[in-house]
Length: 345
Image 1 (cartoon, rainbow, N blue to C red):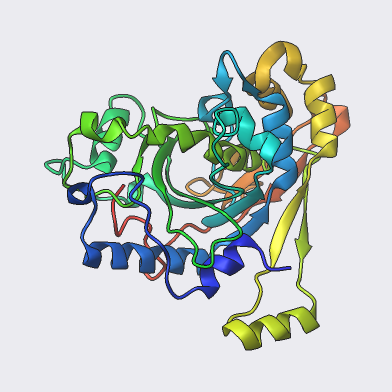
Image 2: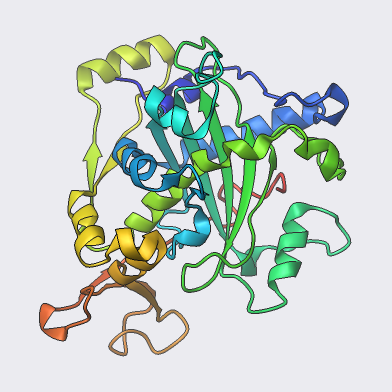
Protein backbone atom coordinates (compact mmCIF):
# COMPACT_ATOMS: atom_id res chain seq x y z
CA UNK A 1 0.00 0.00 0.00
CA UNK A 2 1.46 3.42 -0.96
CA UNK A 3 2.33 5.66 1.97
CA UNK A 4 1.94 9.42 2.35
CA UNK A 5 5.53 9.96 1.21
CA UNK A 6 4.89 7.86 -1.93
CA UNK A 7 2.03 10.20 -2.79
CA UNK A 8 4.23 13.28 -2.21
CA UNK A 9 7.08 11.98 -4.35
CA UNK A 10 4.93 10.61 -7.18
CA UNK A 11 3.10 13.88 -7.88
CA UNK A 12 5.01 16.31 -10.08
CA UNK A 13 3.17 19.29 -8.66
CA UNK A 14 2.17 20.29 -5.13
CA UNK A 15 -0.44 22.74 -3.96
CA UNK A 16 1.18 25.53 -1.93
CA UNK A 17 -0.74 26.49 1.18
CA UNK A 18 -0.60 30.13 2.21
CA UNK A 19 -2.43 29.27 5.44
CA UNK A 20 -4.83 32.14 4.78
CA UNK A 21 -2.08 34.75 4.41
CA UNK A 22 -2.71 37.70 2.07
CA UNK A 23 -0.87 37.26 -1.25
CA UNK A 24 1.69 39.98 -0.49
CA UNK A 25 3.02 37.93 2.46
CA UNK A 26 3.63 34.78 0.40
CA UNK A 27 7.05 34.16 -1.16
CA UNK A 28 7.42 34.67 -4.90
CA UNK A 29 6.96 31.82 -7.35
CA UNK A 30 10.68 31.36 -8.02
CA UNK A 31 11.44 31.11 -4.29
CA UNK A 32 8.66 28.56 -3.77
CA UNK A 33 9.90 26.46 -6.71
CA UNK A 34 13.34 26.30 -5.07
CA UNK A 35 11.83 25.40 -1.70
CA UNK A 36 9.79 22.61 -3.22
CA UNK A 37 12.82 21.24 -5.09
CA UNK A 38 14.94 21.29 -1.92
CA UNK A 39 12.23 19.56 0.11
CA UNK A 40 11.77 16.89 -2.57
CA UNK A 41 15.50 16.13 -2.50
CA UNK A 42 15.37 15.81 1.28
CA UNK A 43 12.40 13.46 1.07
CA UNK A 44 14.26 11.25 -1.39
CA UNK A 45 17.19 11.01 1.03
CA UNK A 46 15.17 10.38 4.19
CA UNK A 47 14.70 7.37 6.40
CA UNK A 48 10.94 6.79 6.42
CA UNK A 49 9.36 5.84 9.74
CA UNK A 50 5.68 4.96 10.11
CA UNK A 51 4.61 6.05 13.63
CA UNK A 52 0.87 5.32 13.82
CA UNK A 53 1.38 3.47 17.12
CA UNK A 54 3.47 6.31 18.61
CA UNK A 55 0.85 8.88 17.58
CA UNK A 56 -1.93 6.77 19.12
CA UNK A 57 0.02 6.55 22.39
CA UNK A 58 0.80 10.29 22.33
CA UNK A 59 -2.75 11.46 21.66
CA UNK A 60 -4.15 9.00 24.22
CA UNK A 61 -1.86 9.95 27.11
CA UNK A 62 -0.06 13.22 26.45
CA UNK A 63 -2.69 15.65 25.17
CA UNK A 64 -4.52 17.22 28.09
CA UNK A 65 -7.52 19.51 27.57
CA UNK A 66 -6.44 21.83 30.42
CA UNK A 67 -2.64 22.01 30.21
CA UNK A 68 -2.39 21.30 26.49
CA UNK A 69 -0.16 18.76 24.66
CA UNK A 70 3.29 17.70 25.84
CA UNK A 71 5.84 19.41 23.62
CA UNK A 72 9.58 19.17 22.85
CA UNK A 73 10.56 20.55 26.26
CA UNK A 74 9.10 17.32 27.69
CA UNK A 75 11.26 15.10 25.47
CA UNK A 76 14.75 14.81 26.98
CA UNK A 77 16.37 13.06 24.00
CA UNK A 78 16.02 14.99 20.76
CA UNK A 79 19.45 14.08 19.36
CA UNK A 80 18.95 13.04 15.73
CA UNK A 81 19.01 9.28 15.12
CA UNK A 82 19.16 9.95 11.35
CA UNK A 83 20.58 12.78 9.23
CA UNK A 84 17.15 13.06 7.59
CA UNK A 85 13.92 11.32 8.51
CA UNK A 86 10.30 11.46 7.41
CA UNK A 87 7.87 10.43 10.15
CA UNK A 88 4.32 9.85 8.99
CA UNK A 89 1.08 8.85 10.66
CA UNK A 90 -2.64 8.72 10.05
CA UNK A 91 -4.83 11.15 12.00
CA UNK A 92 -8.19 9.43 12.64
CA UNK A 93 -11.17 11.54 13.76
CA UNK A 94 -10.70 10.91 17.50
CA UNK A 95 -7.09 12.17 17.37
CA UNK A 96 -8.08 15.16 15.28
CA UNK A 97 -10.78 16.09 17.78
CA UNK A 98 -8.31 16.11 20.69
CA UNK A 99 -6.61 19.12 19.08
CA UNK A 100 -9.22 20.89 16.97
CA UNK A 101 -12.86 21.89 17.40
CA UNK A 102 -13.97 21.72 13.74
CA UNK A 103 -16.31 18.75 14.21
CA UNK A 104 -17.64 20.21 17.47
CA UNK A 105 -18.54 23.37 15.59
CA UNK A 106 -20.13 21.46 12.72
CA UNK A 107 -17.28 21.98 10.25
CA UNK A 108 -15.59 19.12 8.33
CA UNK A 109 -12.25 17.87 9.59
CA UNK A 110 -9.49 19.45 7.53
CA UNK A 111 -6.91 16.64 7.40
CA UNK A 112 -6.31 12.97 8.12
CA UNK A 113 -2.63 12.33 7.44
CA UNK A 114 0.53 13.93 8.77
CA UNK A 115 4.16 13.88 7.65
CA UNK A 116 7.08 15.42 9.55
CA UNK A 117 10.38 15.88 7.71
CA UNK A 118 13.34 16.31 10.10
CA UNK A 119 16.83 17.23 8.85
CA UNK A 120 19.73 17.58 11.29
CA UNK A 121 22.76 19.83 10.97
CA UNK A 122 25.59 20.25 13.46
CA UNK A 123 25.69 23.91 14.53
CA UNK A 124 29.48 23.97 14.05
CA UNK A 125 28.79 23.59 10.32
CA UNK A 126 26.35 26.52 10.19
CA UNK A 127 27.59 29.93 9.13
CA UNK A 128 25.10 32.79 9.35
CA UNK A 129 25.45 36.51 8.87
CA UNK A 130 24.74 38.18 12.26
CA UNK A 131 23.28 41.18 10.43
CA UNK A 132 20.60 39.01 8.83
CA UNK A 133 17.24 39.16 10.58
CA UNK A 134 16.32 35.53 10.03
CA UNK A 135 14.84 33.10 12.56
CA UNK A 136 17.95 30.93 12.17
CA UNK A 137 20.43 33.69 13.03
CA UNK A 138 18.30 34.92 15.94
CA UNK A 139 17.82 31.50 17.53
CA UNK A 140 21.54 30.64 17.28
CA UNK A 141 22.64 33.99 18.73
CA UNK A 142 20.14 33.57 21.56
CA UNK A 143 21.42 30.09 22.38
CA UNK A 144 25.05 31.21 22.38
CA UNK A 145 24.39 33.23 25.52
CA UNK A 146 24.96 29.93 27.28
CA UNK A 147 26.55 26.79 25.86
CA UNK A 148 26.13 26.59 22.08
CA UNK A 149 23.72 23.89 20.94
CA UNK A 150 25.02 20.75 19.28
CA UNK A 151 22.41 20.29 16.56
CA UNK A 152 19.92 22.35 14.65
CA UNK A 153 16.83 20.43 13.53
CA UNK A 154 15.07 21.78 10.44
CA UNK A 155 11.50 20.48 10.49
CA UNK A 156 8.80 20.75 7.83
CA UNK A 157 5.23 19.72 8.58
CA UNK A 158 3.00 18.17 5.90
CA UNK A 159 -0.70 17.90 6.69
CA UNK A 160 -3.09 16.54 4.09
CA UNK A 161 -6.16 14.62 3.10
CA UNK A 162 -5.97 11.25 1.32
CA UNK A 163 -8.64 12.30 -1.14
CA UNK A 164 -6.61 15.22 -2.53
CA UNK A 165 -5.57 14.40 -6.07
CA UNK A 166 -2.62 16.81 -5.78
CA UNK A 167 -0.88 16.86 -2.38
CA UNK A 168 0.01 20.00 -0.48
CA UNK A 169 3.45 21.44 0.14
CA UNK A 170 4.59 21.71 3.79
CA UNK A 171 2.49 24.08 5.87
CA UNK A 172 4.97 24.90 8.67
CA UNK A 173 8.72 25.33 9.07
CA UNK A 174 10.10 24.66 12.54
CA UNK A 175 13.61 25.12 13.93
CA UNK A 176 14.80 23.32 17.07
CA UNK A 177 18.21 23.63 18.71
CA UNK A 178 19.40 20.60 20.66
CA UNK A 179 22.28 20.46 23.14
CA UNK A 180 24.92 17.74 23.41
CA UNK A 181 22.78 15.82 25.94
CA UNK A 182 19.85 15.73 23.52
CA UNK A 183 17.70 18.28 25.37
CA UNK A 184 15.97 21.32 23.87
CA UNK A 185 18.50 24.18 23.97
CA UNK A 186 16.12 27.13 23.59
CA UNK A 187 12.61 27.95 22.46
CA UNK A 188 11.57 26.59 19.04
CA UNK A 189 11.15 28.90 16.08
CA UNK A 190 8.33 28.24 13.70
CA UNK A 191 6.53 29.90 10.86
CA UNK A 192 4.42 29.38 7.77
CA UNK A 193 6.31 27.46 5.08
CA UNK A 194 5.18 29.68 2.19
CA UNK A 195 5.88 32.96 4.01
CA UNK A 196 8.17 35.49 2.34
CA UNK A 197 11.40 35.56 4.41
CA UNK A 198 11.43 39.35 4.25
CA UNK A 199 8.23 39.60 6.30
CA UNK A 200 9.15 40.40 9.91
CA UNK A 201 5.84 41.74 11.25
CA UNK A 202 4.96 38.90 13.62
CA UNK A 203 1.66 40.47 14.67
CA UNK A 204 0.39 40.28 11.10
CA UNK A 205 1.46 36.65 10.83
CA UNK A 206 0.34 35.30 14.19
CA UNK A 207 -3.25 36.42 13.75
CA UNK A 208 -3.58 33.48 11.35
CA UNK A 209 -3.15 31.10 14.31
CA UNK A 210 -0.84 28.78 12.42
CA UNK A 211 0.76 27.68 15.71
CA UNK A 212 -2.31 25.54 16.42
CA UNK A 213 -0.80 23.01 13.99
CA UNK A 214 2.44 22.68 15.98
CA UNK A 215 1.21 19.72 18.11
CA UNK A 216 1.02 17.64 14.91
CA UNK A 217 4.85 17.64 14.96
CA UNK A 218 5.13 16.29 18.51
CA UNK A 219 4.50 12.56 17.87
CA UNK A 220 7.51 12.62 15.52
CA UNK A 221 9.67 14.13 18.28
CA UNK A 222 8.37 11.53 20.72
CA UNK A 223 9.28 8.79 18.21
CA UNK A 224 12.73 10.38 18.00
CA UNK A 225 13.07 10.05 21.80
CA UNK A 226 11.80 6.46 21.72
CA UNK A 227 14.52 5.59 19.20
CA UNK A 228 17.05 6.36 21.95
CA UNK A 229 15.34 4.22 24.59
CA UNK A 230 15.98 0.64 25.55
CA UNK A 231 13.36 -1.95 24.62
CA UNK A 232 12.36 -0.05 21.49
CA UNK A 233 13.21 -1.84 18.26
CA UNK A 234 12.64 -1.04 14.61
CA UNK A 235 11.30 -3.30 11.90
CA UNK A 236 12.05 -2.75 8.22
CA UNK A 237 9.16 -3.09 5.75
CA UNK A 238 9.84 -3.80 2.08
CA UNK A 239 6.96 -3.51 -0.45
CA UNK A 240 6.10 -6.67 -2.32
CA UNK A 241 7.82 -7.07 -5.69
CA UNK A 242 4.49 -7.28 -7.54
CA UNK A 243 3.06 -4.13 -5.96
CA UNK A 244 6.34 -2.28 -6.39
CA UNK A 245 6.53 -3.18 -10.08
CA UNK A 246 2.98 -1.98 -10.72
CA UNK A 247 3.58 1.28 -8.85
CA UNK A 248 6.86 1.86 -10.69
CA UNK A 249 5.15 1.35 -14.04
CA UNK A 250 2.37 3.77 -13.12
CA UNK A 251 4.37 6.54 -11.43
CA UNK A 252 7.99 6.10 -12.51
CA UNK A 253 9.16 5.69 -8.91
CA UNK A 254 9.40 2.63 -6.65
CA UNK A 255 7.50 2.44 -3.38
CA UNK A 256 9.60 3.51 -0.41
CA UNK A 257 10.86 1.16 2.23
CA UNK A 258 9.89 2.21 5.72
CA UNK A 259 10.45 1.36 9.36
CA UNK A 260 8.05 0.90 12.26
CA UNK A 261 8.81 1.08 15.98
CA UNK A 262 7.96 -1.66 18.47
CA UNK A 263 7.01 0.38 21.53
CA UNK A 264 4.86 -1.94 23.67
CA UNK A 265 7.81 -2.88 25.97
CA UNK A 266 8.70 0.83 26.25
CA UNK A 267 5.15 1.75 27.22
CA UNK A 268 5.23 -0.83 30.00
CA UNK A 269 8.56 0.54 31.26
CA UNK A 270 7.23 4.11 31.22
CA UNK A 271 4.31 3.01 33.36
CA UNK A 272 6.22 0.73 35.74
CA UNK A 273 9.74 2.09 36.13
CA UNK A 274 9.26 5.63 34.85
CA UNK A 275 5.97 6.13 36.73
CA UNK A 276 4.82 8.27 33.81
CA UNK A 277 1.39 8.99 35.34
CA UNK A 278 2.98 10.50 38.46
CA UNK A 279 6.25 11.88 37.08
CA UNK A 280 5.19 13.11 33.67
CA UNK A 281 6.63 12.17 30.31
CA UNK A 282 9.89 14.14 30.61
CA UNK A 283 11.08 12.51 33.83
CA UNK A 284 9.83 9.05 32.83
CA UNK A 285 11.73 9.18 29.54
CA UNK A 286 14.81 10.51 31.31
CA UNK A 287 14.76 7.51 33.64
CA UNK A 288 14.32 5.05 30.80
CA UNK A 289 16.71 6.46 28.22
CA UNK A 290 20.40 5.81 27.77
CA UNK A 291 22.94 8.43 26.85
CA UNK A 292 25.55 9.37 24.28
CA UNK A 293 29.30 9.22 24.83
CA UNK A 294 31.45 11.22 22.43
CA UNK A 295 34.80 9.59 21.64
CA UNK A 296 35.44 11.41 18.38
CA UNK A 297 38.06 13.86 19.66
CA UNK A 298 39.64 11.69 22.39
CA UNK A 299 41.81 8.58 22.19
CA UNK A 300 38.64 6.63 21.52
CA UNK A 301 36.52 4.06 23.31
CA UNK A 302 38.85 1.47 24.88
CA UNK A 303 41.66 3.55 23.40
CA UNK A 304 40.89 2.67 19.79
CA UNK A 305 37.24 3.17 18.69
CA UNK A 306 36.47 6.75 17.65
CA UNK A 307 32.89 7.88 17.15
CA UNK A 308 29.63 8.88 18.83
CA UNK A 309 28.32 5.91 20.83
CA UNK A 310 24.99 5.20 22.45
CA UNK A 311 25.04 3.53 25.86
CA UNK A 312 21.84 1.69 26.63
CA UNK A 313 21.57 1.67 30.43
CA UNK A 314 19.23 -0.21 32.73
CA UNK A 315 16.71 2.24 34.18
CA UNK A 316 17.86 1.55 37.75
CA UNK A 317 21.53 1.71 36.77
CA UNK A 318 22.49 -1.67 38.24
CA UNK A 319 25.68 -2.91 36.61
CA UNK A 320 24.68 -6.53 37.00
CA UNK A 321 21.96 -5.89 34.43
CA UNK A 322 24.68 -5.10 31.92
CA UNK A 323 25.46 -2.31 29.50
CA UNK A 324 24.98 -2.46 25.75
CA UNK A 325 27.07 -0.22 23.52
CA UNK A 326 25.76 0.65 20.07
CA UNK A 327 27.49 2.83 17.50
CA UNK A 328 24.66 4.88 15.99
CA UNK A 329 26.97 6.13 13.20
CA UNK A 330 25.23 9.47 12.92
CA UNK A 331 26.43 10.87 9.60
CA UNK A 332 25.11 14.37 9.23
CA UNK A 333 24.86 16.05 5.84
CA UNK A 334 28.16 17.14 4.27
CA UNK A 335 28.81 19.71 1.59
CA UNK A 336 27.81 17.28 -1.16
CA UNK A 337 24.55 16.28 0.49
CA UNK A 338 21.24 18.14 0.47
CA UNK A 339 21.63 21.27 2.59
CA UNK A 340 18.46 21.82 4.62
CA UNK A 341 19.59 25.40 5.26
CA UNK A 342 19.57 26.43 1.59
CA UNK A 343 16.35 28.19 2.47
CA UNK A 344 16.79 29.42 6.01
CA UNK A 345 14.08 28.98 8.57
